[in-house]
Length: 528
Image (cartoon, rainbow, N blue to C red):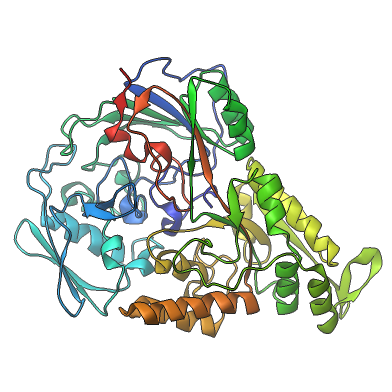
């Protein structure tokens, strides 16, 4: 969710996300016209800043670096490694040579032992990192001298190099701590361009430039991430000058179009909004209900009315322009089909037009996180569409602390999406082995055809075999939907126009400190 509260390592990725209160609009943290500091408004904060628990796992962390990183076009490039890995012909061995002269922010040198320690700790079952399944292919990781790291895989895993954007932590700091509870979670030490200076929980995180960064000292010397859950408050504080930049829903971003001092940045994404349909719920667990909801929803109307056109209909977890998207699964609203499915399954129209079967009403609760206007609007539109087919959706809001314990039985307006390779996002979303594992497979989806396709896609190095597997998966999701996929949303950012070098990437679900125009903050230059 890109905007969901990230409470587990699987979801923590490369951003500052979570649910929190914000300081009052009058308590200015803005940087005025100074180009060497920036204050950015984000929706949430993390529970941890430790990569051992999942922080920054998809790259772009400002505190840490991985062996590799991604450029503006998402191509892999060397970071802590001096070059892309050497890979054996069988695809089972990856060798990385480390960049010379890299130091952690405490002055200690980076060595191969730090890389081995990082991966070994993440893979340790005692570490509470629910992203562990993403590194399932690793059989062994070992140091070869002080400057080489060798990964041996259990099976050829085509997208493995992309997994090595995982941030590296210093063994000399983290080794003596419990990775789940140690001080490293809130007092990190990394090799990145910025160092955490202060963290006022629920209010802001402050970072200062690392003057000894191996990539060169950043020109932006101070960065403040103001935690502002409410979209409208974030827009108000940006308008008042309290913030230099913020992520905003499209309709709020549009209110700045005539502000010549600010610039709007749009980012295409893999980020989708979806409704989880728990299989243990007696209503949402009925395949006919799920199929009817899939037919009843008007995805294009959501794009037009809720997103102001800043997005695309979602017919599954992959966007329509992704090369892995299964052609032919696009579908529009079809209320006649939805009603026919319910009729044939024995769901008869009852009081108030709500369907009933065996004395049970076709009614369930849909939760969405408070303060998220885009999700609220999706939830209300979804409920309206469902009612036209005779299904009652009762929309409720709450914090993630309220929502998380209820995910087993109640539907949630959630958000997911990963770029780079279909395995990155689909396995944790859909594989039955991860059902109910934190925010992994939130709907507890269980389909043997999908599981087989996921396993094939993960373990095969043949492009055609992988393509066929993911086509099968997407077609099965239409037949047996465990989620109602609604929209892929564009991320929209508004920022004071005082710097050059800004751009956006095609983004995953996550957005916050490390995504958006500030993904390459260390490369910004003040305008002359």
